[in-house]
Image (cartoon, rainbow, N blue to C red):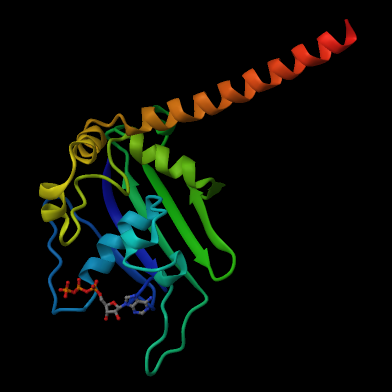
Length: 202
Ligand code: ATP
């Protein structure tokens, strides 16, 4: 599962549509301070379903929308699209019939985020699980933020363990277990209610 293209429009400093082709091998992004190198990494994290504005260096998620500059007015929405080459079939089995996967996330002021997977509208969870099952995603240890190494050195063992779990690709299973537990609790509550009704009728 290889990232082949990243398209940005209105995302942070990338106000104009920007299309970046990611070739095989090592890709380096170089430029002067403040030119938007970290914004690119954040765009990658964001399209994979990041929900924490702080991970985007913002106070709220709408801070990712181009906020305006001396000569440009602010935008009302931001969009990031990520293309994945799945010709090696390393994406989860549900995508076995496709060589290319396109994931799009769009945020509109006062509306929030919407995701599309292969052109179809999906939930944030669907996108997050796609990447979690492929041992990557917004929290992947492969995406290293500035200051993250010193954070890791000072982290508590439980936080370090989460990083190992992300790397091992089992965080998706934890999410599924959590959802199964919620469903089980709901079912138990329903059963208890049925018991009450049966008791009243007896
Ligand atoms: P450095 O090399 O110093 O780490 P960098 O190349 O990684 O810098 P970024 O931190 O990615 O640069 O980009 C910072 C720039 O993005 C700043 O000029 C900031 O004003 C701009 N920026 C961030 N958010 C927005 C936004 N919502 N709207 C417009 N510009 C933004």
